[in-house]
Length: 186
Image (tube, helix red, strand yellow):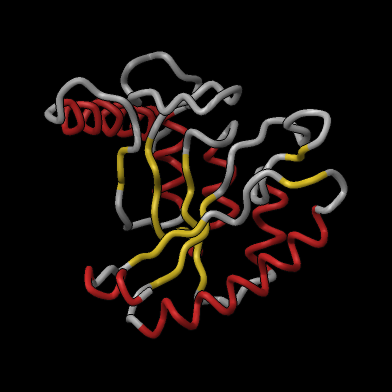
């Protein structure tokens, strides 16, 4: 944290775990809560906010000897966030979960930052949102973002050809969202 302090971060992100051994999920959940509470004191000491990112995991088992990381489903993310102090927040990676809008709704005011990328829910794709390669429903995602009153970063974490594509992509996603709102009479 001493090195982080030099950068004066406002948000510090942690992953909740790496792959787990079989049948150790409950132990790892308890350990993660204890670690998060200790780390949060250090994060607050440098005037930053702690966030924990949801992890990738369409199926529980990674292989015959390992389970996927913690925070892999909406239900588990809600369970874990509810066990944490109110000043530890959620970072949602839109590429890590099928139907990320459900996690956005579930996290609500605990959502502090987004990692914006498209995916297939089968691999760590990190597709550019406007590439058409992933399965995310961007209107549903923007509707959820709007519904929970999210005002944080829209941070791309994806492959791209030229940085100028970010603005154009965001504008096209936003226009699709506005058109859906107009159709719905909202």
